[in-house]
Length: 128
Image (tube, rainbow, N blue to C red):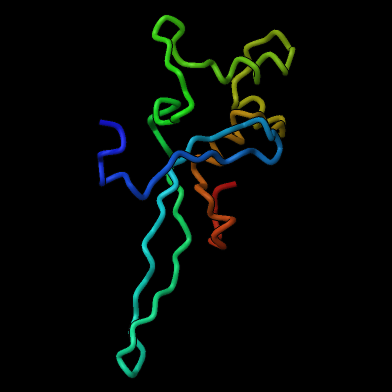
């Protein structure tokens, strides 16, 4: 039954949006962490809340409670609009765009997916 799995009680579907392309939504799993409990020098326990952790969600739209699956249609084709917006009519590789200094929605999607909220957490990332 839905909701009976206690292993997933502290996680939920979340999306990170693009900065250059705000319509990009990268599916993540938001894992809510329990507080850290420490004791002071007198043995009195103190709790400190922990920020949630975001991990890339490989399940696609199926883990989104608002997604209605239709096996006849398949998965939504999220890249179609990105390609159509370029309106160049050619099939150009991401490598060719990168060499030309052009950042595409696909590139930002991958950067968000691989960076996994490092900037917000104050972690220096070497992914550009």
